Amino acid sequence: MTGWNRVLKFWVIFVIATLNINLVQIFSSPFKLISKSIYTSIIDYSKASFSKFLVILLNLQGNGSVVRVYNPVTVQPQSVIFSNHQLYTDWIYIWTLLYKLESNADHLIIILKHSLKHIPILGWGMQFFNFIFLRRSWAVDNKTLSNQLHQISANSNPYTLLLFPEGTTISNDSRPKSNNFTKKIGVEDFHHLLYPRVTGLLHSLRSLSHNPNLQVIDSTLAYPDIPPGVYGQDWYTLKNTFLRRISPDIIHLHMSSWKLCDIPIHSDDLFTSWLLQRWHEKEQRLRVFQESHTLDPSGKYQDIPLNLTHPLAHTLDAFIYFVPIILVYVLCRLVI
Image (cartoon, rainbow, N blue to C red; front, side, top):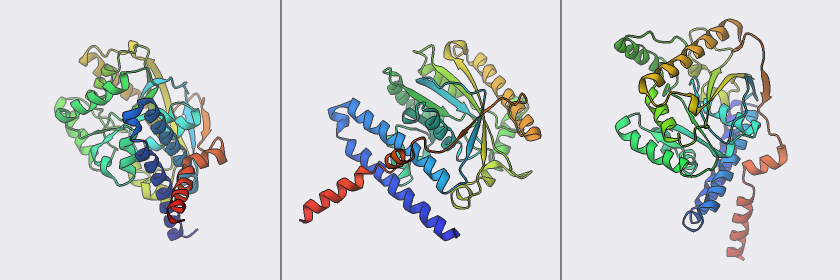
């Protein structure tokens, strides 16, 4: 397929799927006043539909990928995942993995930068998904995060909160900032990671601490075939991934899991030490990966292909097939 054909196909399927999802979300809005449970169910359905659409997109526009999971854990109904951040597609791979694991893909909440909130179509959908958008100013973000986490913790509904403590991907811009910060506080910076921001993760865990058995998962992501001296975000760009078929064949992901009650969230200093220990472990895994292309020298892993588990049914779900049918019916009724 030529480049322009691939671009056209991408935009056609992207606009159709996301617009249908947006329409369902918009039409569900009155239920927010009538029945919160019905409204939530519709939004969860739209969220599950989008996770299936992401799988389709990865296979149609990308190479199709496999997630190689080291030390796989069962994702619990209420959980928090924190991860290192290398690519703009990190969240896509984690979300589609949750779909394949049948683990909260319809209940995922992602903490993202505020600029993504107003992207046409996609940003609108993310707002309906109840994603959390932060401005990277704690004076402002504290209230935003507290309010939305309070809504999450106000009931026993399932959820998986995903956040990236580094705050951004590693790049020519973020690398010097991390170096300058570590010099300022008198510690050594990481080579394969950015120095993590503690405040957002700690505040999130404290806000959700009504459940002492809340599962906290540490995800370490690594990608193969990135040329030496090139940052991952500059190689596996969104354009390369979806329009040029330059995407990782295998996404390497290591998982570690704790109960919240075993993490020292009561003390800022102890939690900072705990998180930095996780970052040193990540650094070691990524160093090993660079040398041997594995996140676990023991060689134990599970390969999970990112494809649809029920191709026909989930393709129909991904494009929310009944929306155009309803629209055509309504138009016909108006015309005839």
